[in-house]
Amino acid sequence: MTNNCNVLVTGANGFIGQHLIKKLKSLDVNVSVLVRDRNKLGFDDVNIFEGDIFNNEILRYAVERADIVFHLVSKTHDFSCSHNSIDDYFKINVEGTRNLLNACIGSNVKHFVYFSSVKAMAEDSKDVLDESFPPNPTTVYGKSKLAAEKIVAEYGERHGFKTTALRLPLVYGPGNKGNIYRMIKAIDRGLFIIIGNGENRRSMVYVENVVDAALAVVDRQEATNEVYIVTDGMDYTVKDLYETIVKELRRKPMPFCMPMNLAKIVSWLGDVAGNFVKKPLPFNSNVLNKLTASYVLSSGKIQKNLGFSPRYNLYNKIDETINWYLEN
Image (cartoon, rainbow, N blue to C red; front, top):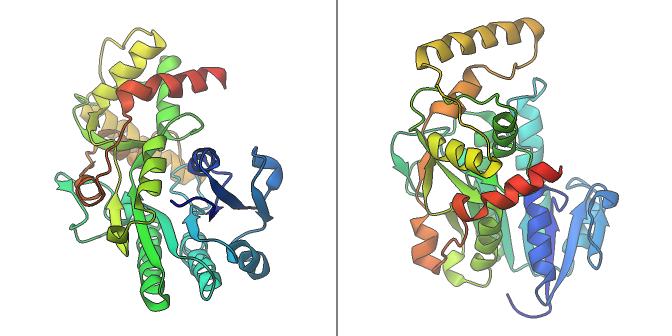
């Protein structure tokens, strides 16, 4: 990334956006952000455009001088919400992205970096997946992210600017109240029990590895119209996660695990009760699948093509995540 480069970050109030802006501010670049509420930003010395990705006037001003756009705005995957609809995901993830791309036409934008998800490929897999895997998303969220990826690539080819999509698995780190935060909270309260033997493996990525990858693709011709999976470069079993968090919290591990057959019965009861109250319960079939299925991904492509090497992992960064949890 060249000095005095003009950068626009959408979704700047989000978890990844906050970490990305912090890194960008340490570089000699001019940072602009698109946010719906400037009071939640928490940063000074950035150019603020207040509005959403459907405000065409604001978008035109926001992209007018931008050399690089990091597009993070997204309707995220959330099993806890019962009111999510197909229209919600496709409006924000697909049509919102298209609207932003339309604003980029004829502007100074040279590179559009889209933050996607591995859910655009599948929900889980027994095999190790890489970018050559034919995408077959099964959720509305995954389908919307794949559709947005395709639109980003099409616009780049048609209008002459570089595009890159970063497919991310579960992202963890300080500031994120997602799955790892909830796992830490449950373990801290003595409410987390490993289901089965805990040997199912998952790929994850520390937030600073995401930021490093986003910066690594910029100004690289090899990254033009490419899709890259970004992970920590290693995989973790649920047992690994549990034991690491227990140790860092200085808690005693549970002396037993929940048998899979019992977990299936409890999750079925959760489905039935959730349908009755019209609200997903804390433990249901979706949650059981997330806790027991494997989903292993290879980030070899970005490492081979761009020489990117993730610097962080669960073992050298879990302390920061747990310290943030304890403080908040």
